Length: 440
Image 1 (tube, rainbow, N blue to C red):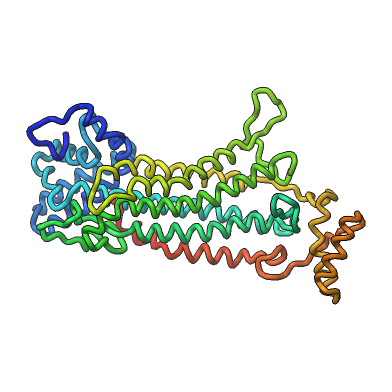
Image 2 (cartoon, rainbow, N blue to C red; image 1 turned 45 degrees about the horizontal axis):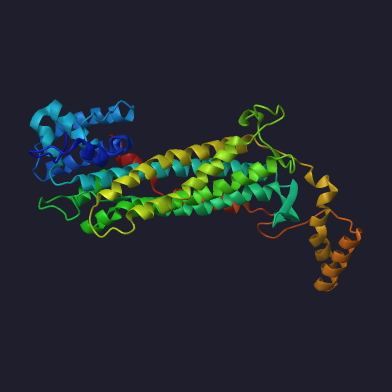
């Protein structure tokens, strides 16, 4: 069943090729397709294209279909092209010709646009909440371990004193910046394309503000041509936000793998979160962080994938855009899985509190000695040379009592400021409005 069927049949292989994975991908969109249809027909009743009794019956059936989709019982039947066709088919079976009226004033183009916007909006909310969970775990570890020193590195050479408070806190603050990208993506997503039809509007007197309000959008994509131009652009912008978070996770995962190795021994992953070897009985491998690193590196390629699919298309709809769904829709589950796993292990991670007892790390205190001498009046460059010569001669003795006080340093992490940054961003998404307005 195809909404565009006429008096001829499409070649079966052409049909298979053009439908592709659309039915599989559209299962992600099913509940949101129903929500969009509910708002659309509510608007149609206000402009006289449906009677109040028709609206009542259609809404009742759409609520039933929504429950099927939300509970995972919704299926797109063989021979049915997409989610839009399936919903309309189900309504027509249950209500007869009344079910055929729901498409008035819209195209599958703006239907899939609104589906994608509603789906993406919910996914961005889920990701924001999971980022906050991980952020809280990192801040808690940073506060707990603020006085536990560890070596800092440049060029993978021991450099200066750091701390676990700094290490965990750095990734927390990184997530604050990542959340700004996520918020921008959410704001661009949270605009209503419904009513743009095939990209050129409709001769019906549609009330686009009503559907905007019913679906909890902040505003609409006003220009109908631009609404269609947003297909691909929205996904690309969201993909950049996801890639930013993935970049933070990938770097953290690399650190965790490195610091967990015997050569470093800075952290210990919970044994139940490691895997073994089929030949080496001593192995406890950090496979979870290795997979997080790989998955997040793959996610960082997502903006490029989306860009290469839609980048050279002129104005208007093209079937190329269908392929974006195949890389875009499953990516949310992958990122959410990585966020969940990272937060779980960070919560249970143990650290080595005595790393700097090993004299191989004594040189990291050289800068502290240079600064002490400079504070006592010796010119900095002379102090630098004196300490350098002591290190070369093997006579340098490290004073491991350090005192850093400036903002963001070992002794003044500013975690309260970092928490305030995160809370400010989370609070300005406006999730509450959507929650109140979009519960079928």
